[in-house]
Length: 157
Image 1 (cartoon, rainbow, N blue to C red):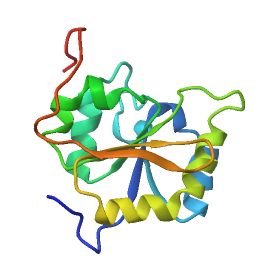
Image 2 (cartoon, rainbow, N blue to C red):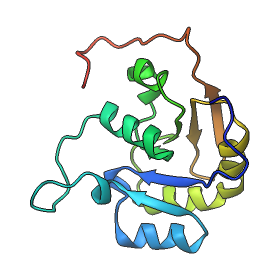
Image 3 (cartoon, rainbow, N blue to C red):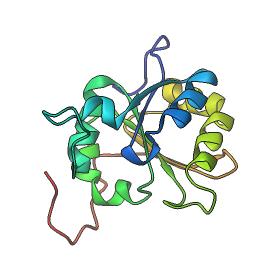
């Protein structure tokens, strides 16, 4: 699907690191619809699964039509072959750490809300973008069939 349908809703899928109730409440209060890792990937005991591989998360976001929010800014390189099979949008934080915690990235998402919604509607898919601490969406690129991985470690399944 080259472009999202105009009526498609922007639903963020937050990786496990974002999944606190406070962060979800702030994002929902800002008008986002949010799905958390712990809601989807549960073990039989009801606790969040451990060691879920990125390709499984990418496939879930594709099939559920979610925008993946991750702290893995290199996902575009390490999982490009999996991403090419999807119509996913991925937003990665520019850093996987913050001296003030994950709250800075939640606020950046809120600041970038209009830009994110515009990308969901208009950006050719699959796409990958970076989120700055100030809420700028940078380095957005469409993942094309001719892109290749620079991966040297074994593939995750």
